[in-house]
Length: 512
Ligand SMILES: Cc1cc2nc3c(=O)[nH]c(=O)nc-3n(C[C@H](O)[C@H](O)[C@H](O)COP(=O)(O)OP(=O)(O)OC[C@H]3O[C@@H](n4cnc5c(N)ncnc54)[C@H](O)[C@@H]3O)c2cc1C
Image (cartoon, rainbow, N blue to C red):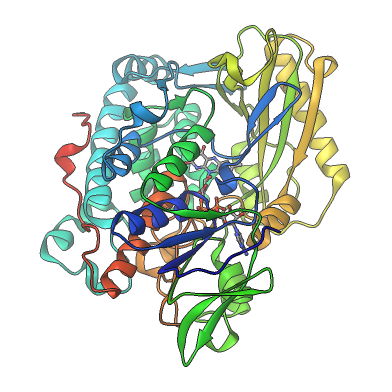
């Protein structure tokens, strides 16, 4: 535990994930004195990085989607992505291993549409129509919805928003929306994977979230050389440029209250006075464990009723050989999709025959593995709140390795020189993650916008940010969440908040 020297702080931020970094930097850029308290020795939260035996592993996010969000974020502080990290677009964007064989998803729309056409006559045109609608949702959502604090439905009761609401397709299910356009099971799985992996069953997800297909397919899949942690390093650099102070190895033990208002934090037994706190750690942890009981808006029964997004069973692997034909991102959809979805969402169980995902950044980036080696992680989505079962984890590892080796047609297990397992237990230990969730709340209609846990605490002066509040899970939404929470603090301090609308003309457009 680092020694804290209490000094005057305008805002204390708990956690240095994307939300905490964005909140702190936004506030500091407006002249407030901000300190970030982080439990770990490094920033990044779920996007931390570790190095071992010459391998550099990103621990969490690996898909860099919505590049416009990062561009706009850094531009607010007079910086560009280019100055901070070397971003490359991946082509193919990713590979999908179906039972019928592999499919490489090209980065450009026209070759993708041609590929769809070879699988299902007419599907190329359908893809363009689907993406054109998805672009509308993306533009409306990103331009007018996500930057709102979502305190109440009234914020959305403006004429222009109400006029656009039907185009967001909030009341239609993602599953039926996809099936309206495509019949081939492979194309359906391809379109459904972003919502399944990050949120909830497509049947329970509003068609609004096809905006993620626009992000994935049209805006592209990118990679910052050196790893996803480069984004964190860029954000920390900009935070420091704006004057943010960091206290690492500091676990916040309580949010303090005096006379009904926020009066500081307790960190390592020391009281740190300040009138504003942004809790950018897991919401449930902050509200149920750090806030005084009388100021909690929710109780354990509320949390137990939330639909959580999946946890993950991860294996970080260092392999002392190259694997010919391996892609940067490969999704293994060679076993039944619905069965695994049920085991995550309906009838929680360790999956019998899991879908999984392989990330191998060494395919793009030689800096993350020793020469002649591959760096990869395998990710299996699992139900949140599972009981520990190492035997099940070992069984799953064996199953997915069998499938990976069969598809790659090379022995891999014999060449593993580094292996680390990471599962729901570590999500709880490292992030105090409710039920060991990896990505926060599921993206269901009942957990969208003002129906999410509120950004504003019942205790005046305390705010929440991060993937469990508005706008939701994922790196770009977490950044936006931090900025929206910071904006609320600015407004409460009599300063100008950040704009709630974004000029959508600035977005790179795809005209379907
Ligand atoms: C395996 C995995 C893969 C993912 N893949 C993708 C992807 O490809 N693309 C994508 O966009 N998103 C992805 N995500 C989701 C994305 O990583 C998260 O939505 C995002 O990183 C959440 O950021 P956050 O700031 O809300 O929370 P966190 O990153 O969890 O940050 C919270 C911080 O608070 C700290 N903290 C907690 N309690 C305390 C305390 N009491 N005192 C001090 N500090 C505390 C924690 O240490 C942590 O640093 C993935 C997530 C995981 C886990």
